[in-house]
Structures are given as structure tokens and as C-alpha cells.
Image (cartoon, rainbow, N blue to C red; front, side, top):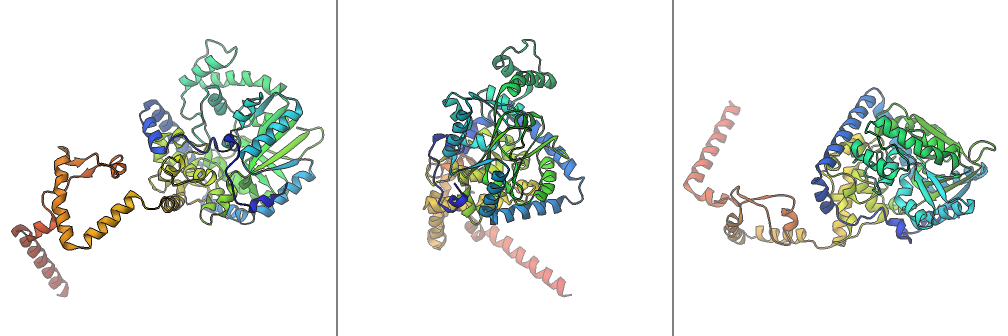
Length: 512
């Protein structure tokens, strides 16, 4: 199949796994409310994000041309999105020339079916996996398990999440919500034959995971990976990581299957020069990735002898067709925006109900999985999961204007929703304020608000349809005297005359 499907209207994935990890069960406000009550979670997140944030600032500050690098990265990604179909066809051609096989998947369901079929053809009942947001997005692990194929995550954080039967809460550090004591308990319970005297020293925990995975590396014949970048010019794929597990998965098995979102393609090999500087500094606060693996097709006698590349759409074409929203596809999954976001730091990643949490997730998820005006659609609340402080825009290595995209998505949601309670309230207010006598009457009637206000002179609960407002903020009680009545009083008249006299004196002084 060729990339001609890129011009077709996007349709929801046919498989339940296609959107399973892009559509939460609850809206963000309700999920965040519960997670805000978890003190341990907030401490874990606060410590981790502050540490990563400080490291990023140190290493980006070392480069005198950091802003120029960001400009270059943004320009390359924008150029890529402008001619994505032709670049994907070039990538397919180059991969095929070098002995690889390219598959096209319209949605997560098709991608899962392709991967499962390829694994079955090898006769293997196990696969080892490199950390991959794309396979998490489509629910590949769950699909393989339903067919009797066992996937083993080999990234330490992903392994922790998998063993805990948990879900990732961060793009870069999936187990960021866990501390070392919790990880120790997970390993003692879930890793066969682990030393019962295992303590919580990070080096010892890593050693336990390494011993558990070593046999899998040496005996499993099929690996599944994602890709950070795919180079159209040469057909080269690249994975960057920090533990070496990716290198093992990419070199030891007989068969390698890579699932790559179509937006990960880059035009030229030379473009890696920019992104291999931007990505590690923005993600882990390192000057370079400890392991940068690249491969081009199949090399006889070296590495996997069968290579498959699955190019995944899953809503990306719909995002690409959105003149404003397509900017979100420039994301290189560094997670810098999560580490500076005050909302993410307090609510955590699970509250977003998606593979992609944080500010970029609040943009990507509604675009990839769809956002509808229905009150029970969880994704409709994600664009509002932001204070619009702009920290994410300042941190993004490719200068995605996330706050502006969130505002646009809010606009789209409002347009889809039709007449909302807020719009009705504004129309009613405009009608009242446009009639002086009616406005005066309304001011007098507002005095009832003082009756329902508490001793702190704040109204904490409003009746429907205004309860959405009071759920997140207090309303000051109406004053005992309106401005109009005060102005009509002796005190008000005297104050206004004094202000007018002061203004006249100031003008006279200026003339002199």
C-alpha cells in the first residue's frame, strides 16, 4: 500500500486498541481532583520535574546558539509537514531498496494486526520491546497478549510500569510517579527469583532488572521498536536512549519490527545534526544521548536479517489537514513541556487519560483521537487542562506555540458545543446591561448573594448551570452598596468633586 491514503478523511480506528490509550475514562477535572489528594504522588512528581528542569537549563545555557538551533528545528519540521506525503514515499523507497519491508497502517487496529501477523510468521511467542510511544498509543502490548504473545518491556521505567500493571504517566520517564521504595516492592512481587533481601538502592534495583532481562535479550528472536527519526533521504531509522536496552533489542534478534508515526520522518540525514543536539538537552538534560542507534534496512550477517517498518497514521492525517493544529505534529517527544508545566506537576500524567500527558498531550490527544462536544467525552476537557502561562512554549525545542493551540482547540470545542450555559449567561448579561433601568433592578436584586455567602464574604457553591464556575473558584459576595448608589450619596458626590478638583489642579500645573 502506498501513502495515497494520506489524502483520505481520517476515520476512528476500527479496533478497541486503536484509541484505547488516547481516550480516557473520565474528564481531566475529575481525574485531577483525585490525584491532587495523593501526597506521595505530588512529592514524587515535584522532585523529579524540578531535577530534570534544572539539568535542562544548565545544558541549554551552555550553547550560545541554542535559540538558533530551536529555529532550525522548527523550520525543518515545518518543511517536513508541508511535503509529508512525498517524504514518506521516498522513505518507503529507500527502506525497500535496502532490504526492508514497509507497511502502511491507517489506524491503531491495522497496525496491531500487522505487527501480530509478522510476529506469528516467525513462530515466536515472545517479543522484546524498545520504549515506544507509538506502540503505547495503539495498545500493542494488550493486543499481543490477547493473542498469546508475551511482550517484554526492556526500558527500566517501562518495565516498572508493566510489572506494576500500571500505566505510564510521563513521555520520557513513564514511572516518574513511583519512588524507589515502591519500585522495590514491585520487583519483589513481580520478578521471578529476585533476591528477597533486595533494598531500595537505585543501582541494586537496576541490577535486578538487568538480570531479569538478560535472558530475554539472549533468547527472544523478535523485537519491536518505535523510532525517534526516520530519514527519507537514506531510509535510515534512529532510536535514542540512555540504558543500552534499545541497542540490545535492535541488534540481537533475528526480526525487527518498527512502528513509527508518520510525522517522525525527516528530509535529510544532515537534519539529525540539529535534532541530536535539541532532543537530549531538552529531554534528559544531557549533552548527548548515551546510545544513539541507527540502521538502514538489512545488512547481511550483521543485526536482524528481517526488518519491517510500520508507518502509522492513527489520526495524524486529520491533524495535518488542520491549518493551525498541524503545528502539534512537530513534536519530537522530548517532554520538556511536562517538566515546566505547573498543572502537570500537581496533577500527574494519569489525570490526562492518554498516552500523551501534559501540555503537548492536551493538544495531541484531542487531535489524534478526536474531540467532540458531548459532555461525556473525556478529550473535550483536555484543552482546558492548562493555565496558559506559556512556560511550555518557552521550553519547547521546536517552538510549538502550545498555548495558542490550546486556545484554538477551546474555540473549536465551543463551536461544536453550540449554545453553552456560559454563552447564555453572557447574552443575558448583555441584555440587562443594555437597559439602564433593568440593570439598576438587577443590581438591587443581587443583594441576595450576601445572604448565601459565608462569613468570608465568598460564594463557594452556585446552582446549575453555574456550578461549573464555582467548582473551581469562589465568587465574591455582592457589595452592600452599588457604585451608582454610592455615587448618588453625599459621600460619593463629595469624593467625585474632590477628584475633579485634583484633576483640574494637575492640568493647571502642567500648563505652567
